[in-house]
Length: 247
Image 1 (spheres, rainbow, N blue to C red):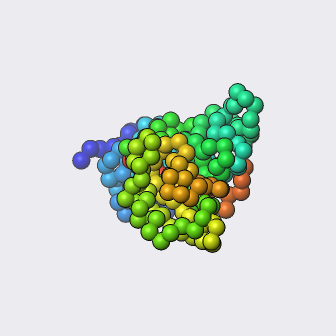
Image 2 (image 1 turned 45 degrees about the horizontal axis):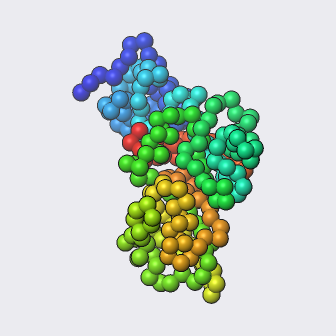
Image 3 (image 1 turned 90 degrees about the horizontal axis):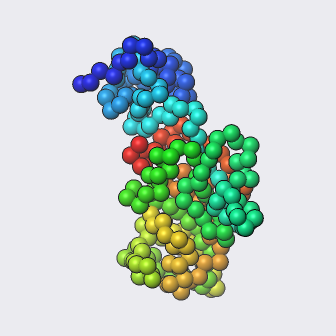
């Protein structure tokens, strides 16, 4: 087994405590229990010192973010806002919601102007790259108000696949939440990232979208975050998000 001890580094329990995992005593117990890995190697020795600038530390398999200059935010994007930090046509953009933050943030993916809901903003380039990359197949959940009563077998049809002009698309899950004779409320889960994919998909099967909100990206849930508000993603939630893309 490789020795991850760095003689002139910082004690591992101090690094973990500084990252918000509890008191130093609690972090010592976490280490002694064999729940911590440093650069892929399990560490139980309380005297271990690490370099916070280079060490990759996981607790219970979840990555610990050691660099406090790196930030990831959840934003509830309102309808009418374009998914860009600066719009050359003068339309409302994302910049207004993070104007008070010192970091230079960029958005992960996008939502069209008429779609509201969860967007991630970060200055972690590797996390952003992996979340956007199709090979990691990060699931995204949408709630859509659509025209017409959705028939019983539509979910199975969507899971089997529907042919669009730029190729087939399959949903990972489909739930009818409410229905009436002339409208339905549905939840769509898919890992596709193509433009307007939910709107195009539902229009193709005869139920055009009237209103659309993204409620989840991987393990990050919109929850009760109000439109135009942000919150910092950290701790276990951030670790789980990073784990979803093998960080």
